[in-house]
Amino acid sequence: VFLILFVFAAGWLIKKSELSYKKPFGYLALLLVGFVVIGGIVLAYTKIAENIEQQTFESQTGGFLFKPFLMHALEARHRGVVGRVVEIGDGYLTIQTPRALEKIMLTDASILPVQPLSEGIFIMAIGSRNDNNFIVSKLQIINPEEMQMIRRGVRRRFGQFQSRHEIPDGKGF
Image 1 (cartoon, one colour):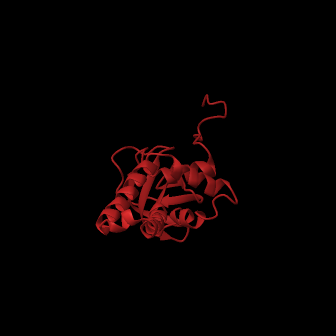
Image 2 (tube, rainbow, N blue to C red; image 1 turned 135 degrees about the horizontal axis):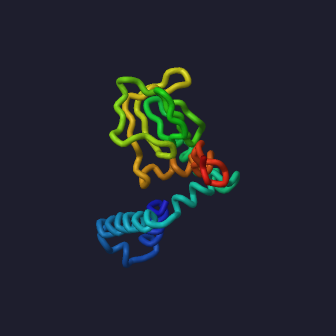
Image 3 (cartoon, rainbow, N blue to C red; image 1 turned 60 degrees about the vertical axis):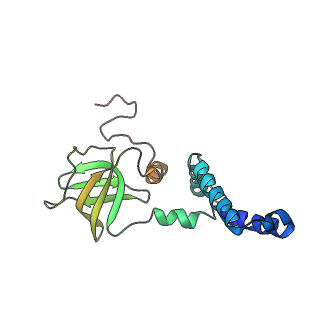
């Protein structure tokens, strides 16, 4: 967006000013690229992306422009799924994704992580879909710093994680 605005501003500046008109276009092009790179770095360290995401999903009118772009990122995939583990069963896991609960089936051929699986962790599974189930070929635990948009989507839909083994006062069994 900034590049487009800056190109129009540069065109207007070239049209109205003799000073910029006499400069080689290479300088102007470097200035444009530098502005976009520095602007991108500054925006990457701000919370503007999270604010846009929040407006998109929490407001009916505020995020109508960005919703088509963000919703595509959260759609179901045929070969992969990411979510928070809420149930560990015999040969299957139930995970929360930004869309819904999903049951993923573990097989003898599934490549599982070295770390033990536990409720509340985020995982990424690669495999294939079969009817309503997802058959896992490889499973990986996701680091807490990764896939923040997926994590926020799961929290938006299901809230903070609470183990099935805890009672509401937090004291457990």
